[in-house]
Image (cartoon, rainbow, N blue to C red):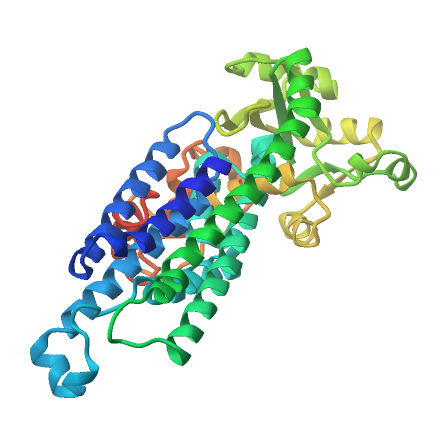
Length: 431
């Protein structure tokens, strides 16, 4: 995370400092070049087994792109035939058509503020969850990366706002367009550099502390116990899902058990895969239900350095459901509507919330659209019905994140083909 911050903020600082050596005519291409390098970094990170949060490089890509566009426009407007007709020739210095910090600063504030408003609903963050799972599914490091990505964006917003305020106040009150003085260089170039170095030192201390905590408390435990495998079963009967509601007295004793969750889950030694036969046997051991219709749903194999997770759905008949309920009175049966209310009220385990949202989202996308995002039916915004009792009849690959992307961007979304192109070739988040 510190290296991401150093590269991202360093690229922005380099763009500002480059004014000392690069003519203004070529500055847009410096911005586009830095954007290209960040683009490669973001795309390569997507291919890693355990990717880290690249939110900051992605935000910096956008800043570089829009800064380059803005500088191109200013260079075009500053041509003799246009500017000389609008402004007094004596007030124009063609050697200094723009000051890079005055362009980059406001754009940085706008982009980081927009990312701050969108938070985890930013397109880049949504795509990360589609490809690698939610922060809860990625374990301790996934939650840490998610939190620190947002922290870095907040820090960049404050730094960009401070630099922009200082530079623009100085420009309006004190700046003379006749030449670029040493004081001008200090305000527009060296001030951003000093703030960058200060932030670099602060983040280095911060991440050193986090690393020591992780090494002492998390990684040490993993080294002793080894990487493990978590296996979870969603129990479905007709249109109901069986969930364990924690007892209030136990809740006071065990705060970690205070969320509603599936009653059937376990942790085993690390396994690269779990066969259908093994899943059936594990489910029998957990619930004492034999011959249940247990089917694989999806897995989280990347993005979690602590464990991998396999998700299954167990379809029960009435006899199996009643027998299990008699022996486990803490298990209650909920409709999808009731489960959605529990999720919205933050009463469910984050892993359960992720499972329900993924299964429902993919099923609805599969029923509504083709794999390329075009509609199956010639009815705009058509919404099919979703019934749990039909789930085992549908041949849906819940393990394919393609359907999550189809749900996010499809023919019912305006300019969806342009959005696909933009996300793949400009934002670097691909398909």
